[in-house]
Image 1 (cartoon, protein in one colour):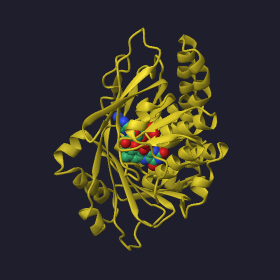
Image 2: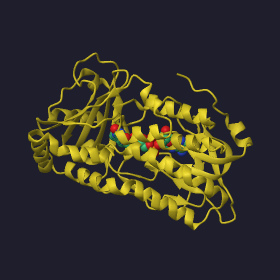
Image 3: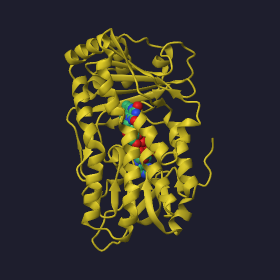
Image 4: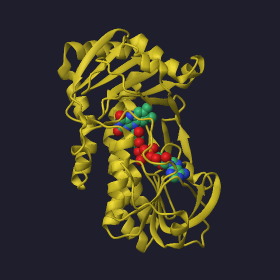
Length: 387
Ligand SMILES: Cc1cc2nc3c(=O)[nH]c(=O)nc-3n(C[C@H](O)[C@H](O)[C@H](O)COP(=O)(O)OP(=O)(O)OC[C@H]3O[C@@H](n4cnc5c(N)ncnc54)[C@H](O)[C@@H]3O)c2cc1C
């Protein structure tokens, strides 16, 4: 699969842009797609070469799929030979529960995100890969935002737009030089760890099911993606990773403790880590800048909310941007804060509750026994998170 219609840095610097979008994950791509459909001139900047690997559980829940269908991007997931998820197998200390899922699919982030970039390009966005974007600080006299472009470690140009969407993921690195976007990291935040294994030809970890290993130090999710490879993603306590020889060893320990098999490919796999994942940007908006997706805040992967939230926020911000282009004022900022809050507030209660439950070994043990005896008890929770 190859990406066409990418733009060079020199061309990008010579053109006028209505909107610059930083980051080509689900939030950035969907926002670029939606804005281009409104005939705005959109530049989508991504620091990595595509397709790229990203630490993620690779499970798109029903809400994310419905949102894609609503904006005409349902074929991205329907056209692929993807793996539909029908159940969730949880193991803790040798105890197991299997919970039915109301929908969802497993798809590798390299394939999914590249399809989203292609959709944005097809709608009219220009794509600038392998380029790190860094917003310059803003002065009251500025009517637009300047974004510095770095390629292979060298500052290679500056692009300007009336609006910048910051969708660059955890910790919003492109805002490092800007005041007013403070990010608060939760004290007990875990670290994300993940890998996509090479072909293993094993019958273990069957497709169509999310396999989840839990111990008191974190949890590990395993799922077969579209080509049958096993994706592994974990959220693990920082102290436990420090005590283990490596992030990989901490993953293996959690799998062993909960009673899952250790495939040889897992021991040989190369694992990547993230910065602490539970964090919140206090004010995800500032003059001519909207912050969305993980860049605005993230709770826990267990809840499976990440990509669904990123997509919902992208669709919502794209409805506000045309008015923000005409006039940036306090009301626009308030509207974005309110809408972003509305997207997450109902689910936040359940997510926080689940995240809390996972930190109590006794509660996990009791919960699993309950779900094992009465599988119907889990249904309203799973349905709620998927809606
Ligand atoms: C362990 C783990 C498991 C998870 N499992 C799931 C799951 O199963 N289901 C789910 O829905 N969610 C899951 N998530 C959450 C999900 O990965 C995120 O919520 C989702 O990727 C957020 O999308 P985004 O577009 O906001 O950011 P991202 O997907 O992180 O995309 C940001 C992009 O910006 C680019 N970028 C960064 N800095 C710059 C820069 N300065 N200039 C240009 N580009 C830049 C990055 O390279 C990246 O491509 C998981 C997360 C973790 C950590």
